[in-house]
Length: 184
Image (cartoon, rainbow, N blue to C red; front, side, top):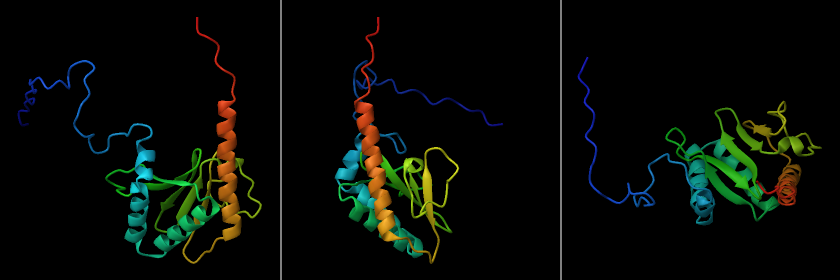
């Protein structure tokens, strides 16, 4: 068994180790972003570019389907924000996320399907029966679209609008909740 030696510690006084000092080095790859950093990236168009790259990288029916769903989402709600979350070495493009007052839906691609998962799908009316996956949970619902399948665009856009309305309703409910009593 090889003899393992500990690496010598850097003893230079950089100021970064002093209490209250902030590190000026960039975050390491895979480090979690501060809240709002993802939204800032989305505002700069970085998330949209990642989604564009993801669609191009697929180069098949899944890319075409994801692009069409993305177009319908923006038609349904022009104020929707695009984000890419869960970026990691095994998934360098991340997962496309569409948000308005919270996550509306995510778009994932698999070998056999494009899956749109609605964060509050169980709370939504689905009169056209678009939800066909993740039906057993209490929160989420999903739509799996397989090669050659089409989606009722009008019903899908209504579902997007309902998801945004649900997010806004939940957001308003949280802001109207009773203030916490003073701690003694």
